[in-house]
Structure formats: C-alpha cells, structure tokens
Length: 127
Image: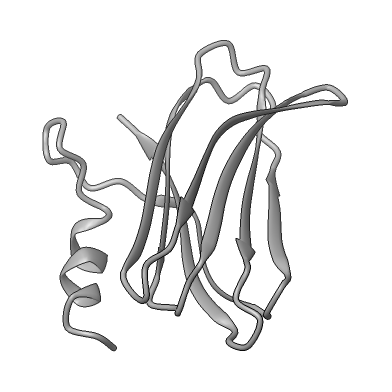
C-alpha cells in the first residue's frame, strides 16, 4: 500500500464536525478495466440525511467521477469531475438527502486504453 494512502484511509471515518467516528454505509475496492465504467446504485428510501461520497485511486488516469441523484425513474447528474493525474486521484462530494426521497448513483469511468484502475469507494453518513 502506498504511504500516502494509509493516512487518508485512517482519517476517512473521522468527520471534521465534532470528530465523531462514523460507520461506512458502503466501502469497496474495485477494478475498472480500460474504457469501462463502474456504476453503483444506493437505495436510500426514507433515509434523510447528509452523506459524503469519497473515491481514491492510484491509477494512471484519466478517470471521470460522477454523482447522480435519482428520484423515481429520473436520474439527474449533480456533479462530475475529470482527473488527468498519473496517480493520487481523489474525489469527494457531499450528497444532501434532506427529505429522504432521493437515491444515489456513483459512477467512475476509466478512459485509459491500457491499464486497469483500482478505485476505493466510500459512502459515509455525516452526523
């Protein structure tokens, strides 16, 4: 494991507000092959709150990170970030679901034609 990633992984469960330890709603290490994408759906019925989506990768870019809000059959992109880095890709987004009516889709696209991207995906409920 790279030296820069270990401190980040240790800090992820700690939130800046109050420094309270929170549990992951979701954590997964995935491999995204060249010219492929990962698309994960999070069903959050009647779960109002604030969530933080975090993705890390030490892949040889470019990578595209997207977050979509889903209500019923409608998907709306709320943010997208393209990362051209050689290593140390990082993406964070705060997803607000105050009414508890929305679901979440997280998407990562690997645009590298040769190398598979290893990506760590976290979703944490904020206090």
